[in-house]
Length: 324
Ligand SMILES: [Zn+2]
Ligand SMILES: [Zn+2]
Image (cartoon, rainbow, N blue to C red; front, side, top):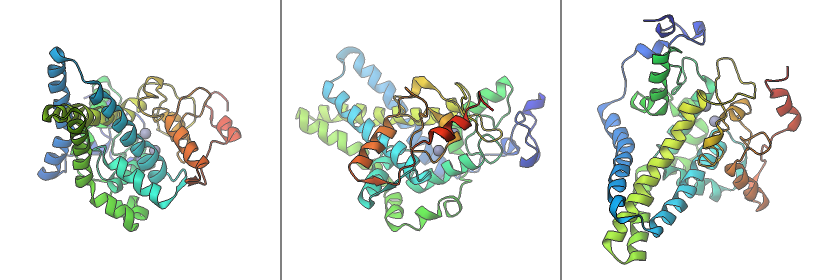
């Protein structure tokens, strides 16, 4: 065991290179939770393999791709604009109907219910890359082995551990919001809708059951798998690879990773986000494409979003790491 793999005893003793005290604790999740998580994680991924096998000889139907793209955008923005920027960080105020619509769209992404998602993410910001962070890639230290284990943990391993982010503590605002509590309870039903919609659309458009099934595969399961892995890459890669142009809190190693910017709807400007968490725009610099911020701007123009926290140029300038 190298120095960096030896866990520190207490959070206060964390030095930025050792593994976390929790790294040696066994997984706490119940069998039921592990089963549900495994289904949510593995099923879309298996579908990807099946789809590649099927597409090999026959090609892909354009309708399935268009349906997949439409649902990817709607559910993806539900996560980035809704779950993340609105509900976790309060970067703007939305009309009540828009809150419900965004909460429902995000729930259809198979990333857990709204309230648990927000609680985990707020905890991630409270303890970024130090003991207490639910999905830090530095959990097992900074040795090569620790870093690889940490990336796997940050990407999806963390979901198989017990829930350490009680919603009553981290998301009391949503627990006490009857409309949001209802959407959170409807998570299983919204997952079913997320699969039924492409199946029914594909069936209706093609007029055949086979058309419904290929739409279910591409615009249902594969679309879900793709969005899941992009969201999880922000948790894993965007704390390890990329640039750090802005100051963050001690130990926070969030990065900006431009290749993921478009597909993640602007979320991969993760260093900018950790530097200014309540800002509605994550791509703080010129040319940093941020489709979620564009959508929030549109909502603002339509009068559906108010009190939007746009970046303050003077503040941003002071947050740069290349000036002090
Ligand atoms: Zn982060
Ligand atoms: Zn955040």
